[in-house]
Image 1 (cartoon, rainbow, N blue to C red):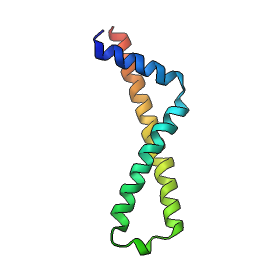
Image 2: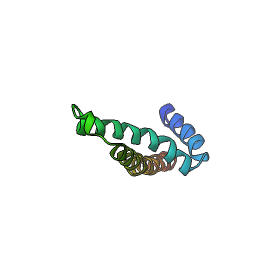
Image 3: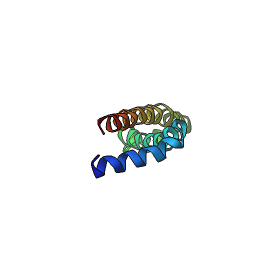
Image 4: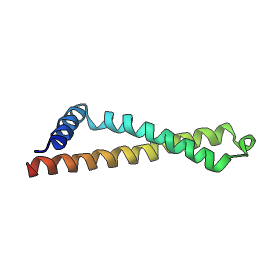
Length: 90
């Protein structure tokens, strides 16, 4: 196994031992916040006065839960696929 592959496998084993839920929450929230900020900038640039608290919190919740959750789950399964492939190819 190449050094880079071994490093990935070792790192992923450590991450995966902490559990899928923790991974999705940790990585999904960060991505969700990024999506939220980009969404706010696109939709409210030069219109900040039109942004209500309700709009703010609805968009924040949707971005983090939906966008972050999908990203976290997708990246978990992608890393699992790569991990199993590297072990199989060893």
